[in-house]
Image (cartoon, rainbow, N blue to C red; front, side, top):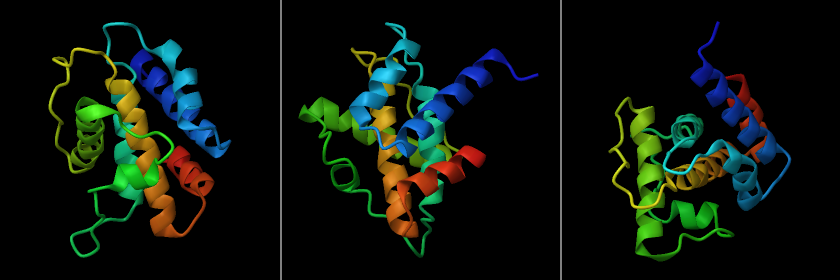
Length: 151
Protein backbone atom coordinates (compact mmCIF):
# COMPACT_ATOMS: atom_id res chain seq x y z
CA UNK A 1 0.00 0.00 0.00
CA UNK A 2 1.47 3.39 -0.98
CA UNK A 3 2.31 5.92 1.71
CA UNK A 4 0.03 8.95 2.15
CA UNK A 5 2.71 11.26 0.69
CA UNK A 6 2.98 9.09 -2.43
CA UNK A 7 -0.79 9.21 -2.92
CA UNK A 8 -0.73 12.98 -2.49
CA UNK A 9 2.15 13.32 -4.96
CA UNK A 10 0.36 11.08 -7.46
CA UNK A 11 -2.75 13.25 -7.12
CA UNK A 12 -0.72 16.41 -7.83
CA UNK A 13 0.93 14.77 -10.84
CA UNK A 14 -2.39 13.53 -12.22
CA UNK A 15 -4.09 16.87 -11.66
CA UNK A 16 -1.39 18.86 -13.46
CA UNK A 17 -1.20 16.48 -16.40
CA UNK A 18 -5.00 16.38 -16.77
CA UNK A 19 -5.19 20.17 -16.63
CA UNK A 20 -2.50 20.46 -19.30
CA UNK A 21 -4.28 17.90 -21.47
CA UNK A 22 -7.43 20.02 -21.11
CA UNK A 23 -5.46 23.05 -22.33
CA UNK A 24 -5.83 25.05 -19.12
CA UNK A 25 -3.62 28.13 -18.69
CA UNK A 26 -0.89 27.91 -16.07
CA UNK A 27 -2.65 30.43 -13.78
CA UNK A 28 -5.78 28.27 -13.73
CA UNK A 29 -3.70 25.18 -12.96
CA UNK A 30 -2.11 27.10 -10.09
CA UNK A 31 -5.58 27.95 -8.78
CA UNK A 32 -6.48 24.25 -8.80
CA UNK A 33 -3.28 23.39 -6.91
CA UNK A 34 -3.44 26.27 -4.41
CA UNK A 35 -5.63 24.34 -1.91
CA UNK A 36 -2.85 21.71 -1.67
CA UNK A 37 -0.43 24.37 -0.43
CA UNK A 38 -0.37 25.39 3.21
CA UNK A 39 1.14 28.71 4.23
CA UNK A 40 4.69 28.22 5.46
CA UNK A 41 5.08 25.04 3.42
CA UNK A 42 6.76 24.41 0.10
CA UNK A 43 4.36 21.59 -0.81
CA UNK A 44 3.48 20.67 -3.55
CA UNK A 45 6.88 21.81 -4.87
CA UNK A 46 8.52 18.40 -4.40
CA UNK A 47 5.85 16.59 -6.45
CA UNK A 48 5.99 19.28 -9.13
CA UNK A 49 9.80 19.18 -9.31
CA UNK A 50 9.69 15.41 -9.81
CA UNK A 51 7.19 15.87 -12.63
CA UNK A 52 9.31 18.65 -14.15
CA UNK A 53 12.32 16.30 -14.04
CA UNK A 54 10.33 13.61 -15.87
CA UNK A 55 9.21 16.18 -18.45
CA UNK A 56 12.81 17.29 -18.90
CA UNK A 57 13.80 13.67 -19.60
CA UNK A 58 11.01 13.52 -22.19
CA UNK A 59 12.84 16.30 -24.06
CA UNK A 60 15.44 13.72 -25.06
CA UNK A 61 18.32 16.04 -24.33
CA UNK A 62 21.81 14.56 -24.32
CA UNK A 63 25.41 15.71 -24.57
CA UNK A 64 25.14 15.37 -28.32
CA UNK A 65 21.70 16.98 -28.56
CA UNK A 66 21.55 19.63 -25.88
CA UNK A 67 18.54 21.72 -25.01
CA UNK A 68 19.24 25.45 -24.71
CA UNK A 69 18.11 26.44 -21.21
CA UNK A 70 18.91 30.13 -21.55
CA UNK A 71 15.64 31.81 -22.50
CA UNK A 72 13.73 28.51 -22.52
CA UNK A 73 11.19 29.55 -19.87
CA UNK A 74 10.50 32.83 -21.64
CA UNK A 75 9.99 31.01 -24.93
CA UNK A 76 7.89 28.14 -23.58
CA UNK A 77 5.83 30.20 -21.14
CA UNK A 78 5.42 33.64 -22.75
CA UNK A 79 1.97 34.18 -21.24
CA UNK A 80 3.37 34.02 -17.70
CA UNK A 81 6.61 36.02 -17.53
CA UNK A 82 8.68 35.93 -14.35
CA UNK A 83 8.48 39.26 -12.59
CA UNK A 84 11.60 40.96 -11.27
CA UNK A 85 15.01 39.56 -10.40
CA UNK A 86 13.66 37.42 -7.59
CA UNK A 87 10.98 35.88 -9.80
CA UNK A 88 13.54 35.14 -12.51
CA UNK A 89 15.90 33.59 -9.97
CA UNK A 90 13.21 31.39 -8.47
CA UNK A 91 11.99 30.20 -11.85
CA UNK A 92 15.57 29.54 -12.95
CA UNK A 93 16.17 27.59 -9.73
CA UNK A 94 13.19 25.35 -10.48
CA UNK A 95 14.08 24.83 -14.15
CA UNK A 96 17.68 23.99 -13.28
CA UNK A 97 16.54 21.98 -10.26
CA UNK A 98 14.42 19.74 -12.49
CA UNK A 99 17.48 19.04 -14.62
CA UNK A 100 19.49 18.25 -11.49
CA UNK A 101 16.83 15.86 -10.20
CA UNK A 102 16.75 14.07 -13.55
CA UNK A 103 20.52 13.57 -13.22
CA UNK A 104 20.22 12.24 -9.67
CA UNK A 105 21.27 15.38 -7.78
CA UNK A 106 19.29 17.18 -5.10
CA UNK A 107 18.75 20.91 -5.78
CA UNK A 108 19.57 23.50 -3.18
CA UNK A 109 17.08 23.81 -0.31
CA UNK A 110 14.68 26.74 -0.69
CA UNK A 111 13.63 26.95 2.94
CA UNK A 112 15.38 30.31 3.21
CA UNK A 113 13.16 31.96 0.60
CA UNK A 114 11.16 34.70 2.26
CA UNK A 115 7.95 33.75 0.45
CA UNK A 116 6.77 30.16 0.29
CA UNK A 117 6.07 30.25 -3.43
CA UNK A 118 8.54 27.64 -4.69
CA UNK A 119 5.60 25.40 -5.63
CA UNK A 120 4.34 28.02 -8.10
CA UNK A 121 7.73 28.29 -9.79
CA UNK A 122 7.99 24.49 -9.84
CA UNK A 123 4.67 24.42 -11.72
CA UNK A 124 6.20 26.79 -14.27
CA UNK A 125 9.12 24.37 -14.69
CA UNK A 126 6.66 21.54 -15.40
CA UNK A 127 4.93 23.57 -18.11
CA UNK A 128 8.24 24.71 -19.60
CA UNK A 129 9.57 21.17 -19.95
CA UNK A 130 6.29 19.62 -21.09
CA UNK A 131 6.06 22.20 -23.87
CA UNK A 132 9.77 21.80 -24.70
CA UNK A 133 9.33 18.01 -24.90
CA UNK A 134 6.34 18.45 -27.22
CA UNK A 135 8.33 20.79 -29.43
CA UNK A 136 11.38 18.51 -29.58
CA UNK A 137 9.26 15.40 -30.20
CA UNK A 138 7.07 17.18 -32.75
CA UNK A 139 3.95 16.06 -30.89
CA UNK A 140 1.12 17.86 -29.09
CA UNK A 141 1.44 18.70 -25.40
CA UNK A 142 -1.44 16.29 -24.75
CA UNK A 143 0.63 13.36 -26.06
CA UNK A 144 3.58 14.25 -23.83
CA UNK A 145 1.23 14.50 -20.84
CA UNK A 146 -0.37 11.12 -21.58
CA UNK A 147 3.08 9.56 -21.84
CA UNK A 148 4.14 11.13 -18.53
CA UNK A 149 0.93 9.90 -16.90
CA UNK A 150 1.89 6.33 -17.79
CA UNK A 151 5.38 6.69 -16.30
